Image (cartoon, rainbow, N blue to C red):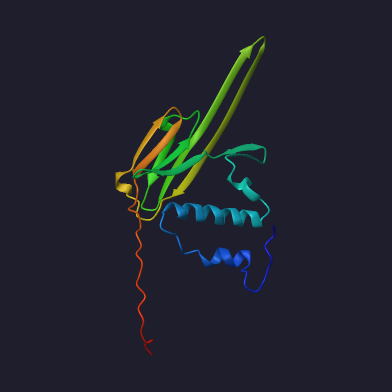
Length: 175
């Protein structure tokens, strides 16, 4: 059912702008909020969710970005990147207080010689993914492992933000 626009109902743009600074109690709400805002920006340009596709055609070449999963399990933040066909030496991981940067280059060469012909195919492509971290992430204890084409970066999760309820007193308002 479509939402009716009334004087009491904020427009979509107003709703998105009102909560920009509110990251909520969970640090992963920040990731969801950023993803929602990126979806909105690209939707406004008529691209929908196609901007996030890991494999897309651009000017006759393959532009590639690895698929990334970010999740919290127990007391650890984990970033997992699928890097099929790459070796540990092909990838670099840099970390600072608020982001993890994963960079690398994918090279593929295929040569074939049979029945009087020689065929060779080569494709190269570099990628760079920057993954924002929740505020308070403990990056000094981060570790990276690479196995079977999967890069996994783990670090202790930031302490949970705990709010408290305030008692509301009665009294005269100060002038």
